[in-house]
Amino acid sequence: MKTISIALCTYNGSKFLREQLQSIVNQKLLPNEIIITDDCSTDNTESIVNEFKSSLNITFIRNIEPLKVAKNFEKAISLCTSDIITPCDQDDIWHPDKLSTIHNFFEENPTKLAVFSDATLVDSHGKDLGQRFWQKVRLDTPQIEAWKQDKALDITLHGNRVAGCMLAFRKELLSFAQPFPAFRPPMIHDGWLTLIACMLNSISLIEKPLISYRQHEAQQVGTRAVEGGKVLTLKERLARPRAEKIAPFLQKRDEYIYLKTILSTYLKATNNPIIHNNFKKIDAIIAFYETRAQLSVFHLARLFPVMKLLFAGAYHRYKDQEASWKAPYIAALGDVLE
Image 1 (cartoon, rainbow, N blue to C red):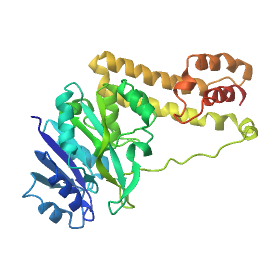
Image 2 (image 1 turned 90 degrees about the vertical axis):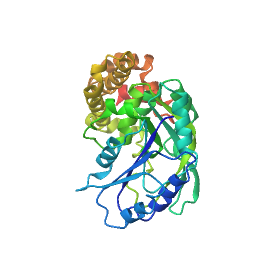
Image 3 (image 1 turned 30 degrees about the horizontal axis):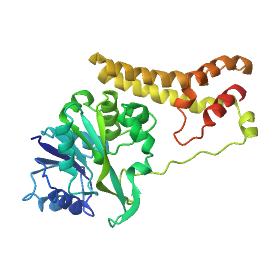
Image 4 (image 1 turned 60 degrees about the vertical axis):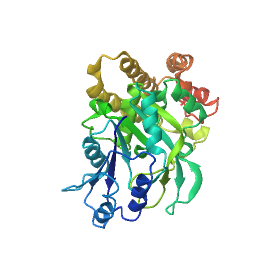
């Protein structure tokens, strides 16, 4: 039977922590240990933790100085000793079958290093908001089916869909991921662990909520609405400076170069054909945005490279998942004319 560690990070968590810990006590399968790293709380977080030490195997560690979210989770995770590690926030409510479901998954899928579930969104009082986390992050049926077909990296490269409190992984994953790099926002620890697991084609999903994910004003990480930019008219698009047009392409290119650089530091030496193929996917995205950013100032000269991208399926492959069928053609036309 696999052992399970919970890596729980706290910071002034007194408002919701008791309910979170009680939901762990209520698990059908109890964890072997809970490592709690506290980021210099000034409330009664520690006294609440002490209430549960008779029911749970808790190790409580108070940081000497604040580490912030990602580094605090890295510390908690690094101190876990079990076969399976489950990150845990201080303000959620775990469903009673969370740990047993995760344990069963790893028993039945010995080659998978990580798995994540959906979550029910609840308000500060624990009331169901009528929405799932996967809906919020646009992990819809087409993306779920693609994920099952080993396209997890393709999906994740367009935006992380996994929250740390819904993730569980084998301790072996850390041999590829630690020490955590210096993250560039918006990436933090959960996005990094997910990305590493995706690069290894070793992350699966559980298609049901295993926690109630609390939404409240004080949370450090939660669901955030995507802010849309201004929609330009055709006249505005044709009149804007070329530098303004290509700025988003250069930004995207640089983001993927950054990802490739840090991933190369951790994974290049593995000589794994799966990893090699996944680096090619990142290279293809970099090339797509590089080509669009470096198109000639002469409109006619843009036609061949744009048509090459279009016929290769690049405009379709990298369009937003909710964009219409027309979007790739409009983007290609814009690259020629703008």
